[in-house]
Image (cartoon, rainbow, N blue to C red; front, side, top):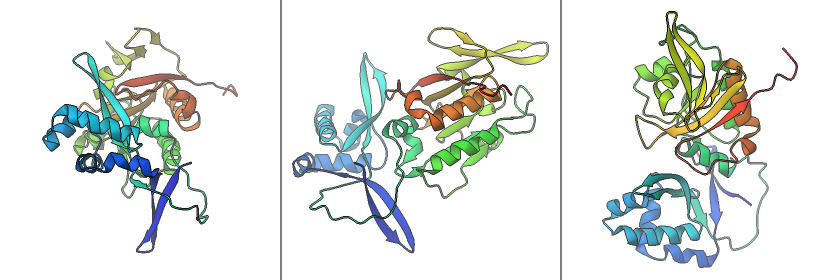
Length: 305
């Protein structure tokens, strides 16, 4: 059962998830090192080697404390990268608060919707507590970019925003046009890109880094799209109803992530949005926390329109 710490401040209600621990689990923070590590990870996810450098400790000592904190329920793995033939895990706090519950007294305050743990892991740094820490980027509806086309799938971001709004708060305007993101120097933020490289110029910039990339061909008519290509197998997917949901590290800022939802056509993008917002448990079944991950989505025209 997930529990929440709720408080009021200046007439507004706030909440953060709290992990209830058994008294024995507190042993992991009964020393200065454990507390220091938690304080660092409260600011941002980090690799053990980064923690060791920050605290001026030998890496092995940090690995010991990190594993102990993970076993005790304080930490979770939110990413992984390959280094020197091994794997380095990226750690974050399991939640924003920890406590020990002394009795079962409680008061009903209504239903609080919480994000599924797998979904939270997929979005990674885009989710901080109950807040969206990033931007949803749609293609400009005006002709732009190398294809000189206008986006016709930007309105699908409304479905995604409504879905995320069940779980997350955001004080700032979180939807931007691709051209504005580039003009305002926001490429280094956490980004959710809607639409492929034909209609979203930011998607065009990261296309070759995607596990499923869009095959861009030049011709006497300009640039043409030749389907979605699997980087791993080389297989090409040309159907209009094919879409992708992908996640990569932001090439402009390695501490940030980019999630891309796009398709060969606008209907493919729609399929990706529906897949992520309605069927995310099945869609993310194969996601294990990889920094670079993607899945194909095939839409179904059920009513033949």
